[in-house]
Every structure is written in structure tokens, then in C-alpha cells.
Image 1 (tube, rainbow, N blue to C red):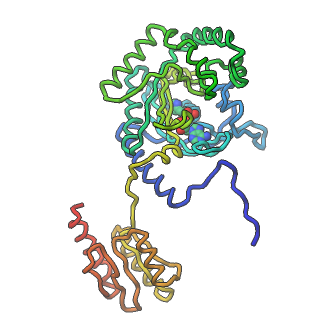
Image 2 (cartoon, helix red, strand yellow):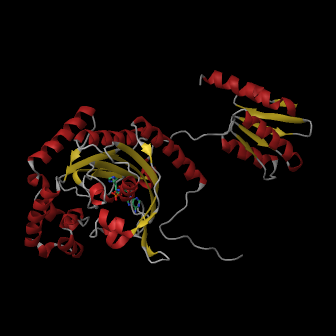
Image 3 (cartoon, rainbow, N blue to C red):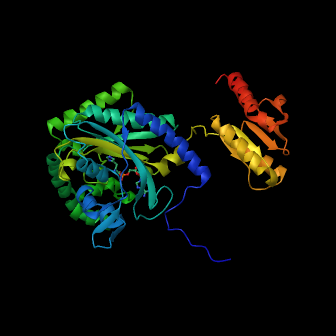
Length: 420
Ligand code: HAM
């Protein structure tokens, strides 16, 4: 046997059983997008590197050390997308979506970050993102957060919602100065990574996961004290809206998030009993990004779910579709079986045909595993048999030409006796 080609570390396929679970969950998500008036946008996976340097920020983990960046054959620097927001804004600006218009958009697909792979952290992972444009007040934040909360609840995922405000860029700048003053005084207690962040992007020191720094960071100035009265009022109104909607939240004064584009509200959902890095979904407001990428001033807010992390937490599995009919056959009768399957599909049924030439016993096993409501077996040129249905007494042989009508009758009877 020739040797196998290994997959790329941190980059995994979804095998059929998992793909079916994902698809069932995606159906739930897609239905919720419709319920909130969000429309799908399909975004490229490749973008110019400059997009992420400008949008996500030069001094962020993503841009500094995690992007898959390479020169195109004509020398342009391109990157596999590490996240969806920057590309969504770019596509919206280029496509003229933001001129005096409100937009509610969603996207999904693979993202790429060269992180150290571990449970819940991959190099190719998938996000489901929602982004709302053209609405400046806290009401849209509350709506987007309500959407995320409903989505997790519907899938049986329990998570804490943490919220914070970073205020305007001016508030953030004043806070930054105060934070730098504090951290400089305690510089000798900072770990190596934090010293580097202090010099380049001090707010990111607050994101440190090092437990030795927890006490030091707990004593750092809180951003709330540096918010302008308008920013405070905005944040207070968001909390009123969430309370009125019955959405439980906690204010997390040191939540800053790892991307530079956020202004005002930031939020994340973190599962109970998990490490902080297991955040399942996260986002915030980013009012300067559209203008920063060449569009007109456009307020914006959104979040993205990490699909792998979501799937690890889903407890309420949506039902997976099963075939209505499974047809067992043998090589000489495969043509007959194929024709019957097509006839049943013409009538709108889901049909799986066993074409692998296996023994009756192993075909029956496969039929059971499929969960099909009716199992049939090709007997000979003249007859096909109903081997098993949900109503046992309906079994028996019949001529091929009658099979479609008989199956529709049986399934119709079962459907009405199910009360479906
Ligand atoms: P983010 O916090 O970088 O935000 O990522 C959002 C979610 O993607 C995380 O909460 C996590 O569930 C998942 N995620 C991130 N990195 C990985 C990884 N290496 N492996 C598995 N899952 C991962 C953003 O990307 C923003 N674009 C969110 C946003 C949308 N903000 C506004 N709109």
C-alpha cells in the first residue's frame, strides 16, 4: 500500500455523521436569521492582507502572528480570512450597501488562524456571523444580543453573557493613558507578553490569561470611569433594553476583546464551567470601520459564533432527516430498484437504495441504521416486498408496478396516525 498524505495540523474535515449534525444546527440558525430579518451575504475567503492590517489592527495577535499570508503570483500580499467582519464591510462598501440604508446581514464559513491547535482552537474553524449596519443606538445591540441568546437557548447551550463598553475612541484614549500609567508602575510584575502588549497595544494586557497577573489586573483602572456621559447613557440604555427583554447579562469591566475595531459596546457568551478561552460567540459595535475602509460614516454592530465550539455544547439536537424508504436489492435487480427509487422520489419521498452488493443481513442492518420508515426488498423480476414499516402488519410482496402507490398509501396512513 502506498503511504497516506497527512492532513494539515488544526485543519479537519467534517465526516458525514458530524456534517449531518452541523447541517441540522445550521437549519435552526438559518431559520432564526429569517425570524430577525437578516439576509445572507457570501464573502470571499481570500482578501488583500492590507484589509486585515487596517481593520483588525496591526498590533493584534491575529495580524501579528496568526494570519495565513502569502504573496500572490503577481506579488500582491493576500491572506486567508481570519474573521468575517472586515470582509463584510469591504464587500458592503464596494457593493454600495451602506448608502443611507439599513442592512442586517449574516454569513458563515471557514476562517483561518495559525494558532496552537488544542480542544476548541483550530487553524481552520467556522464562524456564523451577523452584522447590522446603519443603526447607531443601543436598541439594535439589544436586538442582536437577543438573537444570540435565543439561538443558544434553542440549542440547549447554557452560557453567561458578558457585556462592557469601550466608549468612543476619545474615551478609550483617555483610558489608555491611565492604564499605561498604572501598568508602568507595576511593570516589574508583568509577564513578557504583557510587557510587549504594554508597549504596542496596552488594552490587550487586560486580555491576559496568565493567572499570576489576575490580581494585578483586578486593581487596574476600569474603563467605565473614563466613559463620557453620552457613552455611559448609551450603555445604561442597552442594559435597560436587555432587562426589559429578559436577557440575563453581567457587566465585565475588563472585557476588551482582541480586535481593534470595537467602539462602545462589546459582548461575549462564555459557557458555564469552561475556561475563559472557550468563548462560544463574541462581538460588539464598530462604528468607525466602514468609514475607515473608505465608506461613508455608518454605525455597525455584530457578533460571530465559533461553530466548532457551539457544536461541542449543543445538548438539544435538532432532528436529523431520515429516508422515507430504504430499498434492499441484489445486483441483477439493481435496475429495477433504481427505477422504483426514482418513482418514489418523483412523488416527493426521500429514498436510499443499497447498491453495494452486500448480504441480505448486512443490508438489513444498514436499513435499520438509516432510520427509514419503510424498508423494501427487491425479490425478483416480478415482485418487490415490503419488509418492515412502522406499522408491522403492512408487510408483504407486491408487483413492481404497484409499489409506488402502495408506499404512498402506507406512509400517508402512518403520517395521519402519527398526527403529523
Ligand atoms: P472573535 O472573538 O475573534 O471575533 O471570534 C469569534 C468567535 O470565533 C470566538 O468567540 C470563537 O468562538 C471562534 N473562534 C475564534 N478563533 C477560533 C479558533 N482558532 N478555533 C475555533 N474557534 C475560534 C471575530 O471574529 C469578530 N469578527 C466577531 C464580530 C462580528 N464582531 C463584530 N461582528
